[in-house]
Image 1 (cartoon, one colour):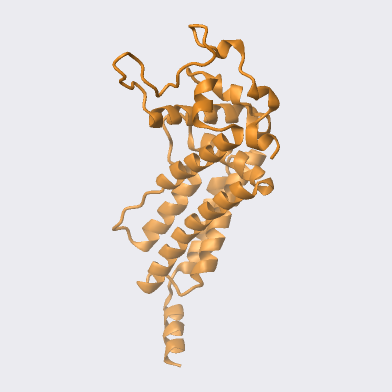
Image 2 (cartoon, rainbow, N blue to C red):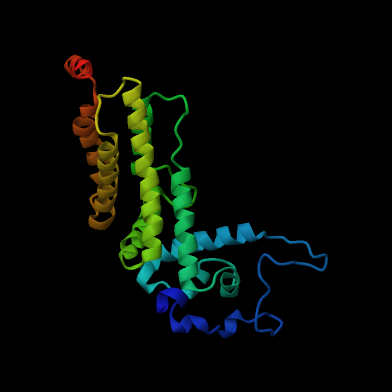
Length: 250
């Protein structure tokens, strides 16, 4: 493939600053032995985490199109050679980074197992829409990078598939809550699949409007609209309950 597989041609040549202090061409990997005893001071997992966070910072500054491997190297205290030790070029790194931020995003959606359907539904929507906050980057810092990759997925079948699977999991979680609410008699009998689709699309549209158009109030406005128009449609009323019983008797 083109640049997406290996990064710009200029990134394939190591600069003199990447050479080891002893005059060798390569620095030892950061997760390799650090002394004569052979003990490792930085694990491979820790090094990759450092690279992922550096990628966050570089993507935020340069965007996906103009991002170079050297930009990521400049965001951490490790040499670019360490990146090449773990990843086979820019595309390989971006694919791993995409999975990394999706794992973080999905791992942040935590709901009390004993919550009632209303509480769980609202908690899922709020966590997808507003947070939580991370130690170094805010929720919206991360969403900016997420949407940067999301936008370019239209030209990348592999990344598009990853986003599709992620979307299905988010939508599926909402569908499951709606189905449980219907079974428990908490929600009115609606098409759970369509409801899950609608709620998930509203979340994505509101986040995109905030990030792409700078509409800071978009998430809160969308959340209020959900309460007023979408969630209200799930409310059971005496007439709806009677109608469902009547339909069942027929």
